[in-house]
Length: 137
Length: 137
DNA sequence: TTTAATTTCTACTAATTATATAGAATTAAT
DNA sequence: ATTAATTCTATATAATTAGTAGAAATTAAA
Image (cartoon, rainbow over all chains, first blue to last red; front, top):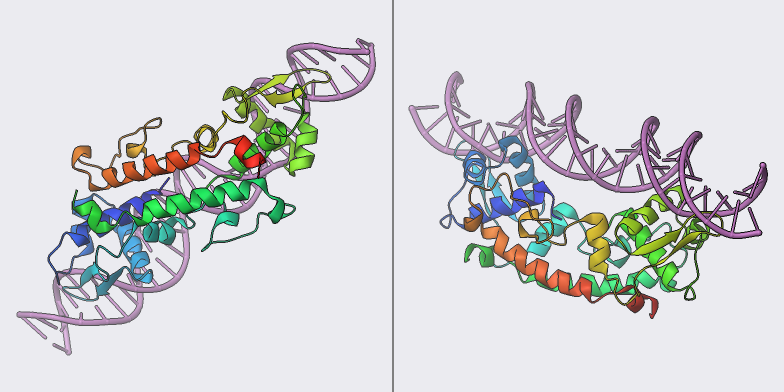
């Protein structure tokens, strides 16, 4: 499941994608339109910025805007940024690989193979969902 | 991601699936073989029992055994039993449906459609992984 | 140069969930 | 009765989630 934070991030990105090109959106406007607690959204937008998905302009008349086209931002990117691995266990992950501490010998692990299959299929599905594909529904 | 509990449940089921037919396994044996804290495993086995995946025999020489064939137990079943919905948000779930509180009008929600697509694909993948398919790797 | 409006940074809090552990009660075989 | 197992209920601790608070920095414009 996505965290509330990830859902908010998606909604914020959808909002930004629906604005005119070169438009800069204030946190307050996004928060109101997408029904997100403003102070929480501030943090989320900073995370999105650190993830290079949005850019910002500081000071008066500042705000946020998409840094990439909505076609280039996939659900997989957003999931990885906020919730981490796509895989069901760290040992089956590429970007967030970690050994299972309770696993005696990874190469002998019966679970891992199946989970890698799942990860491949889930990833493909998530990469097929872009911000623009969602907006165009 | 799967919880530690779900991972342990999977390992326990894999252990049971590898025993001879009619064999009854003690919690202690499963715990040792699969490297699972015994007291934690006790709870997990009870959960699996409530989920009708394993049966138990009480008293001396008691223990646990698979109630269904390993072909009939899929990753989707186990995920649902321990971690709940397969879908990324409750509003896109069938078995664990819940309305998003911050969503003004679900039919207008841009996220939902995409997440339903993901759920369908993930579910299909998870239903393709059975306990037996894992054992046979 | 002051003011207003905005992002940015750091810290804190409350509630929930995850990961167990402890111990007594129950059940069944010998 | 005794032994060995499940079952039940309660507790503990740590991590995570979701959110709040407030001050600092930045920028545009009056």
